[in-house]
Length: 367
Ligand code: UDP
Image (cartoon, rainbow, N blue to C red; front, top):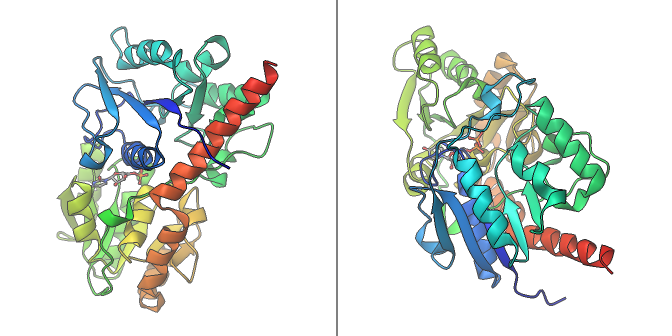
């Protein structure tokens, strides 16, 4: 079937500007989707906080910057916390613009994990679609997503089934996975290097467990990512032998993949229902096997015994044993999995199909 050219508005996360790393995996997800949708011939306007930068391969999209302060992240607030919007919050500015532009566009795709855009969905002229980027970390979000799933299920998509299982959905969820621009990741066939860990340095990411594994094996653990919680980082550092952690900072994708690709294995230790786990796939794109807790997205991405090992959540001994067996994994299998299951063009086609179907359902209901 020939797909017509869509005019789409993409609304970025209201936490951090694109390129800062403060928005987490959503930043990379938006950029690879922009590239994929542009390659498919669609017209895109991206709304993002002031300071956001798109990579050169996304230059075909128009970016509009919005000023305002960050939205507080749901994942660092109590589960029963109410919705808060700071008076000069960037979330309001993003959605004022999105609703205006959305009137003359085919669809608006929301990447923020926030109450306001989801609540707006049935009440506005613009056609709003939501790619949910987190598991169910807030009661308010869970109940609102459940409600939308009952009134307009076609407006929701998720990254993994594990993530979607946090929500009370009326139908089998639309799962679009994620996508990566594979040319940006060099396959490194040799795996003799140290262990690696990547992600925001924050309690829900469980860095301490990965450091414990490295310490048990007498290894060095290279750590990349935004330092979100410095006290948490200091506490971990003081609990293990000096030199176990090799802090590498937050690197660009080009620099990150160069270092990550030298690793023997990536350890992934989520303490929450991780929606997807970009770093898991980025490691595999470089040929690095992943040893992960069988929890959330990573439990759906790693094929145990083929692209790495899955171990019971929070079981440091099991992770230590599995890590010592990582030489049994063929690094080619890791890269192959990403090429087949998580390329940026496959991701863009799945998102395109989701939006096209949603628009068709809307048009049919208006007849
Ligand atoms: N990342 C990066 N540079 C670094 C470390 C991490 O660009 O030095 C990016 C990585 O590419 C990934 C994101 O940070 O896209 C982390 O996303 P993930 O889905 O793993 O976790 P989230 O932060 O969304 O919970």
